[in-house]
Amino acid sequence: MRRFDFWLPIDLFNRIKLMARFYGIHISKMMIQLLEMGYIDMLKGGYDNETVNK
Image 1 (cartoon, rainbow, N blue to C red):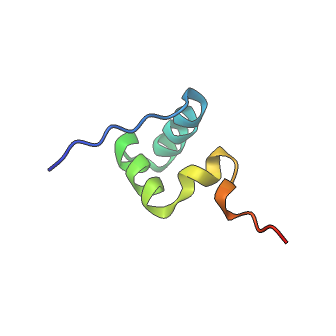
Image 2 (cartoon, rainbow, N blue to C red):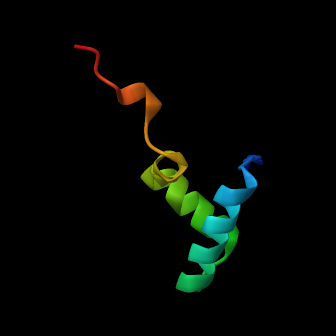
Image 3 (cartoon, rainbow, N blue to C red):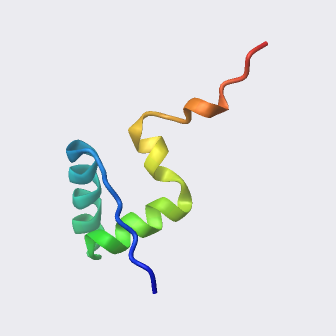
């Protein structure tokens, strides 16, 4: 298995830590689940690359 270093801003990490505590799972498992579901970008404020120029 390869190691994957994942760097987050402190405020985003604190939000994830609160969610992990609320659901009763480890912080790293919560980060993996959120990363898989694509919520990390949503928590940061949305997807910048999905804007449509018309």
